[in-house]
Length: 255
Length: 329
Image (tube, rainbow over all chains, first blue to last red; front, side):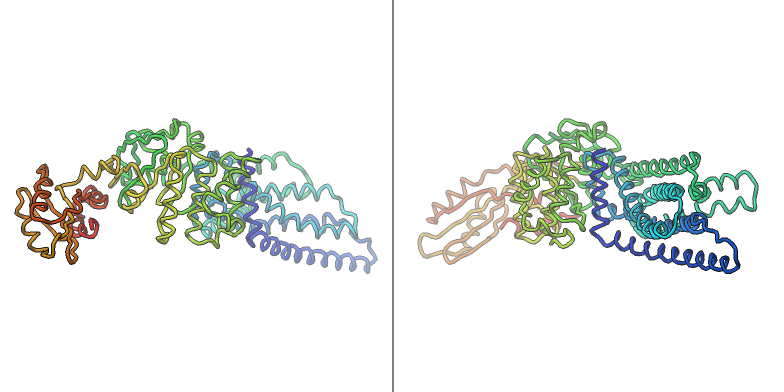
């Protein structure tokens, strides 16, 4: 595990010494800030209208702002995840540095875990910036922090799962753009798989819906820590890393 | 230190390395010679456990590359054809990273990083981003990362490719100075490099082992005709190269005489004779009896280049003969 940590530290270093991490966090904050502003404005407008009509304003900030916002945050995530994961192996393959990693006394799994963990940390760091907006809610209102925390856990788990898939796709090519596009397609498909079940009650549609990443976020978004959904995310992570390991191994046998 | 037995690597349609066997003993520098696409890099990648062989076995420092790859890798320093540098990192951070990957830590890591920086003369670019380094520096950083964990075996894939002549000389000297403490295999298609740096040479072509021997033996083995260089000077004024040449040609057993160099009262001739005929004594007697000075009489060694061309393909035979004068001069 020491080796995984060494790889992870180097990986984080290269995210942060290049403009990648800073660009991503700027864009993420910008987009999330816009969403926050829109939801806040519509919430304020709504409560003002209700007050003028003489009714008691609905003051559930959790339901009105935090929940839809975090659902959006998890959606914004799927645009950023390919950008984070696409370089992980594709860049090493292109630069030939993969030869250094695979000829060092390090296990493949240690390299994979290190890289995936670095990507997950970067994603957490992006998401952390969205938390700044929520600080304002805590200053001016009294939202419940527990559902917020669980929703964040959901976002991080979801991100980690998609990043594991992205890591796998990154091993398939030496072209970062192909890796990024492939990851984006996979993320988007996993997102919309659930739509089938809304009009088709067949068994396969249910399976597809279960595979969809969004159906498992709902409970987290409501502030429910569901073991079923956690297990889904953990198994996607496991599968992604497992496929990565097999793909790296096949690289050795084929290339 | 390295033993290779019937090593084979097959790709989907081609056989890149075909049943090659050789061994390298401790402290030697071995040149791995072959034209492009001969299977040099493939063999090296199998030795470094980058990928496994299709058949056969190889051990490095006593560890089998297939069954004990982690232990084997611990004893190998590897410089691939393009140095594996992370261009967005500073040199010293990179060397520390590689050192850690190879299992160094703490005070030992600091010491080794300082040592390789000095040894490979990269100290003055310690804090530069590697993307900004010149090709020569990149190559040296590549060498530095290969020796950082003081490996028993160094595997260098075309270490001088793409360098300017001065850098080539520096790199060769560096490599030679590393021999003794490390066992070195270096691949190249530049022949003088092998002659200058290596003690032993392994020639492969189209995946097959063509020859493995010491550099001197190889040169001796492939001297087709006995070729002798003879340097003659006139004692008195009268000196005419054509007439001397004529007289040399009359010696029994001599098949051809070529004038290589000619000055006012001295000339160098290359005398070719049939293999196995000893003509040196006759030549010397002729020169002395004719009243000339015999300044030098030595066998003209065949350069590795000719051997290489002879071994690696009939199609280059023509090139070999046309290249002879320059190479032997």
